Length: 551
Image 1: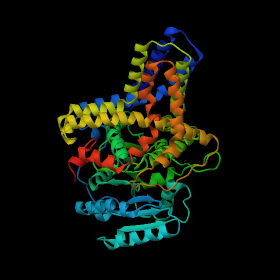
Image 2: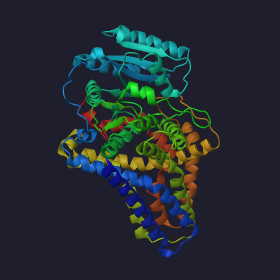
Image 3: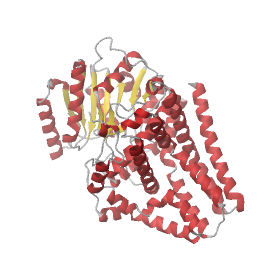
Image 4: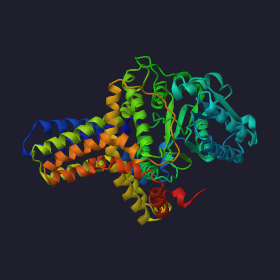
């Protein structure tokens, strides 16, 4: 893995430094100013993430186009030979808190039935780990589980445990299970309340665990399931393309020090239980985002963590509307930024520390992106001069590299006839890709400002935690959207007023980068409107293969 990692970091550095140099050359053409210098400084702070996006995408694209079986080539473990014996006793662990069990249980029934049909069902036990507090929700949960057990072929294979307190959040829930309820199990399948795996996908990872004794985590790529609401439908269409190239590239160069995303994976219980007891943060609080820390701890202890970048058989649901989407992002941000306290944690390998840095970079650039937008507006308002052609070229190159994972993911589909056919043909796929890309430009502008505001709230001492999540599709009223997004909208109008003082050219430059702020409120309402979602479904815009070929 050494040469691959050297190549990767050289590419990241070259792209980051090259982009920053191009911007500096463009801005200095008509002389320097304070805002221009600040623009370059802020841009340089975001450039490593851009370099990482482009590098993972380029590497992944090459593997996807060159390898006959890209997922297997990257995974590096024999995972398709017939099982030489029965699978080891395996717990299918699902963590829940105040969830709608009418949505959770059917996918689990499909998984259990599929495992039974494979002839290996007796090795798998479903374990529901609940952090729902006592009351009506807990009673409803227990009643749903009782009915689910009653309809099972082997009720003893379905277990349920509810904690009185959710100490340690999800990670504490899992470790409590391992300490007190996991005797006799060797492996553990981790699922979230909104995720699903097929029996074939689970058995593939189990075979990998049996083939490589040093493998502690086998993480499956997870894609969005078909969605009716407009926001998750558009989001998962682009996310699927981007994550395929990203995960393939990441898996290729990270090898046995790969990521863990907390669900849709198979874990070896003994090393996980021994090495993944999370430390407290300096203020005594618990770590929110546990998964990357657990992967880093295992890699530091000499265990392998591998990523299988295959779409088949591993799905999850995405938030149904923009408020839930932004709340999820803010929760992830709070958890990932905690990693800054863990970078010097003893026992981590260099790649483990990189995993934590990478997770921080995912969110740390948000204030810098916001600052770039605001400083550019100030420079435009004060009449700062920038050559239009070179500036436009730098912006387009920046966007192409930043969005390289999904752009190259789209390119891969278009270059492969079988892949195009799975999406209903090239024309239909291009329509979905174009719609999604413009939607993403609008969404990312809103998300960037929202992350920036969330970071300010954290700096001011706002609390964080694991709050119950709404996963049900719903509409969003204009009043709710306005209450949540008026700061984003106001910031956008003030900034674009500054651009307008500089003329129509700066406004055109700013629109693809921050135009979403101007339409944040209507975008929130419209992407939650069932009529918009129904129209997209009817026209099959942003339809994924599972819609064309269900089952």
